Image 1 (cartoon, rainbow, N blue to C red):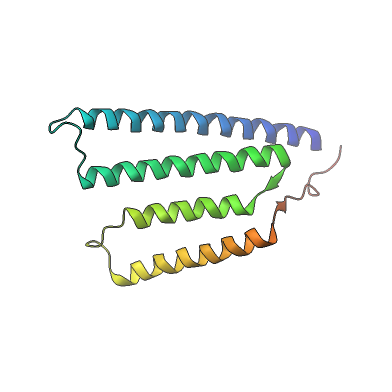
Image 2 (image 1 turned 180 degrees about the horizontal axis):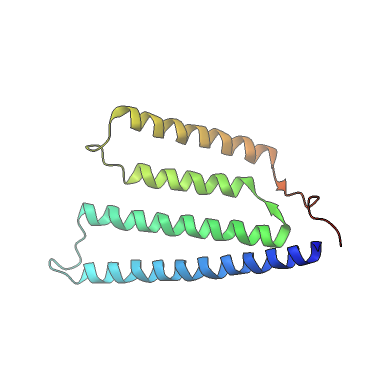
Amino acid sequence: MKKLVQYIEKILIYGILLLMSFILLLAFADVFFEIISRMFQKPYFIVDANSLMDLFSIFLVLLIGIELLETVKLYLKEDVVHVELVILVAIIALSRKVIIWDFNKFEVNEMLSLAAMVVALGVTYVLVKKSNLKVRLPRKNIPEN
């Protein structure tokens, strides 16, 4: 029974890796074509500030996806959740939010909350990095048959 569950788990993880890779390739193609199309619109080779922020947002989404892909690959390879990588994904996601933040839409309290989250994740990252923490997932609950 335990071997069957582990086999199914590996198949699911490979499926997740395949789907995530496919989605990242599509997102990369979208970014590439978006840049090319904006370069050849009048005025040529000019990207305004709003378009640039949109492109940076998409780049950061791609970076988040790549980091998630790396986390899943390491889990498959070592059967260990690397807490450091998970925190990095969260930091990148919050950084994306900070970069695309529209100061006209949100209040000061929301900005302070976001700042507190960034500081908390930064401190957490430093502590995890210093401790070299890794979490091994327990396999005790699966009955042997």
